[in-house]
Image (tube, rainbow, N blue to C red):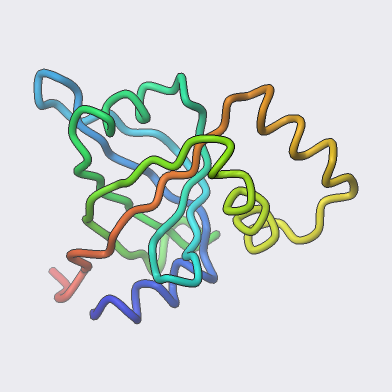
Length: 136
């Protein structure tokens, strides 16, 4: 599998598990919704106060296992480095992320206010390595 094939899969399948690394080096995993932005970065919305955000500020390595809605079936693994975009710079990226994952919001002013209240950030993860490239 190549990076473009992985990106295409993620654009159609948003259920993922994000792995970051704790200070002791052990993995910390979180269920997330993932998508791909126009620049080809995998994007995830989370909170400034989330453990995954704190982990990524210390160690930007991230891995995502993205699964089809059926859970058993096709999946892709992406490894890369995360950049954390905080508010206010993150707002338009968060709006576009929502549009791609869920469609139009009924009240964009309310959505923007919620993003501020929740102290949302946008994780932008590079696609440095993908798989699976063989079956077992």
